[in-house]
Structures are given as C-alpha cells and as structure tokens.
Length: 211
Image 1: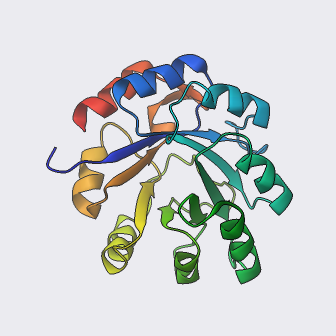
Image 2: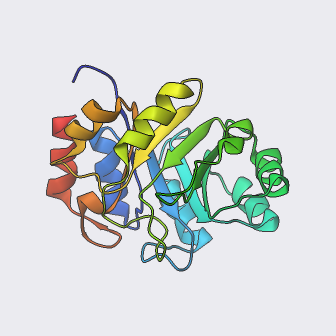
Image 3: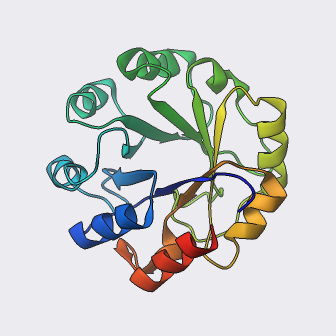
C-alpha cells in the first residue's frame, strides 16, 4: 500500500472479534452504546470489551449524547468519543461536548443529506470528523457507500483535521475508496460482518490483507 491507512473496526460486540481485529492490526476499536443500534451495548459491556484493547485505541460511539451521559463515558476508560448528530447542531451542544472531553478526543459525525452543506462549524470543536453515508432512517451501519467526492473535497480543503471515511466499506472496495478519496483513516463496520455486531473472521482477514 502506498500510504499508511488507519483502520477502525466499529460495532464490536464479541471478545473474539475484538481480539482478532487487534491481532490483524486494527488501530481503533469502536463500541456503540446507542440503544437503538443493532450493535448497541450497555456501557458496562462496552467497558468489558474495551478492557481488552490497549490504551489509545478505544472509541465509544453514541448518538446526540447528553452531557450527563458524556461525563459518564469520559470517566469509563475510553480514549475517544464518536458522536453522531443530526442537523442543525447547536453551538451550545458542540461547546458542551468539546468542553467535556476536549477537541482532541471528540470525533464528530454529523448526518448530512445530499442536498445539505457540511456543517463546517464542527471543525472549531473537534480535531476529527467522520463522514458516513446518509440515511434518513438509520444512523451508521447502513452498508451503503457514501459520497466519496464530498469526502475528498472536504479533506483536501481542511487538511489540518483528521477525516475518517465511513459507509459501506468492504474488503472488495476499500482500496478503491482509498485511491479515490486519499483518506488516511477508515471506519469499517457492516462490511466485515456476517450479521449485525457479528464480525466475519474471513472478511476481517481479507480487509487487512488488502491494506
């Protein structure tokens, strides 16, 4: 591979999947605590799984987190906090999230429709932005490829931020995604599953073999 690409395996729910992802070289492991997600975990279970992961690689994922919840998450042993949100996102909310965990640890993932402008105000509050496929009925884990052109343009215009490409990434298309977007950061979830939250060992191995 002509460039180093960080890989986050998200939606992990099983000990064995965490261990395999790490053994293959995963840079980050993501644990979803959003209760409406088919991969959603209790905070306690997310902590159990995260305990298997070296410090610096543990990402907690939630949707439109309340400040009290984020305080609990902050104190629960995670390194980064990935928050998905609808539009618009208020300055007050962004400031609260960033103030609680710091811009270096906050990963923002605004849900932006095809006709909507990306909320650039988020860049003032987080060092890392995640661009996922938009689905009006689902937050992440859609299995559908997103707008790679938009991602490429945003990451080129604002290279001082970390831009993570997510949405429909599989062992079959991940090399194309890297080439077309120039991304240095990938978030892979449903593309390496046999069922929601159940990672497929063969697909995981294939993903890391092509990267």
